[in-house]
Image (tube, rainbow, N blue to C red; front, top):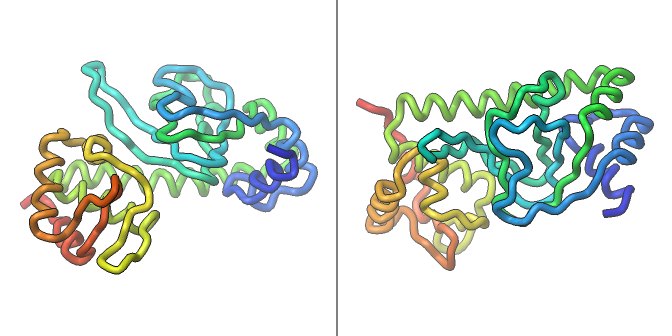
Length: 232
């Protein structure tokens, strides 16, 4: 990737919004371009990483795992996102995995460079704070769902979020333009694949959702919203 493209990508990111030209130049000169094939890890649980990562293309999943081998997908991050900011304040090992769900193009910048930039342009911390608040809000919503909503409601909420982010209107509904298996939804909603399969089978029979060419077609958004009912 050419330097001008790297610089433009950095300039358009939430972390470096409003950065002066000399800051963008320094970051672009320090950035390295890497490719991560699908299912490879940007970092693993417990790893002490000293870089931050910008997602040029593809999709990266942040997830946590148990000692029993169970895992829970916290969030999927896509083009334009930056990851790995905890290394800017601590050397402690990562508390979650970051895995490429698809083939990904990633920018990697050393934390030393980012911290040096922050010394000359402290407004970077304001941007990081805003980004952290946004991400924390999403995490609280996920935790609320886990505590107060049954699996069916959690799966429906995740599916409606994908409609908002990746939905394409077609003649008979809204097609989600990324591939996600029911196993993926089990991880996203913290449920077993068997139970998620039963939920999708029921929705298919009721005309809410169907599978089409390895993608999901939501036929009835209003009906899906009615599935989001808390525990009684």
